[in-house]
Length: 154
Image (cartoon, rainbow, N blue to C red; front, side):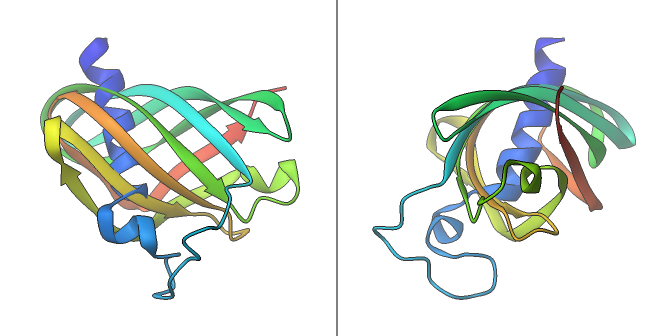
């Protein structure tokens, strides 16, 4: 199970945060260096696949001083195997809590960083951007074109 969770998180992170992605907002424009995030996220998850796979996970969003649990699920394009991932990130353009729900797709190319981590930028249909950094154990995987569905619990 540990490998599965890291794979899911790696996928999210790869799709959300990167060195170049950390500076970009996904539309090719630079984000202000001093821009403060609206929220933060922490998550863990996994994946299992034989070609096309399934990713799942859970996490917490800290928004306006309150923690909100969420779950994630989606399809991945992976080699055969399983992986576990964990990560954290910053959330931008979140003005209303309900806008966090949605389908996140890669807004900028993810990169691999030192120590086996990944960075990427994700964006949903409401314009919410998550810049993530993750660690992975197991196989590396990529999000499918359909992205990852994120839904607040409760």
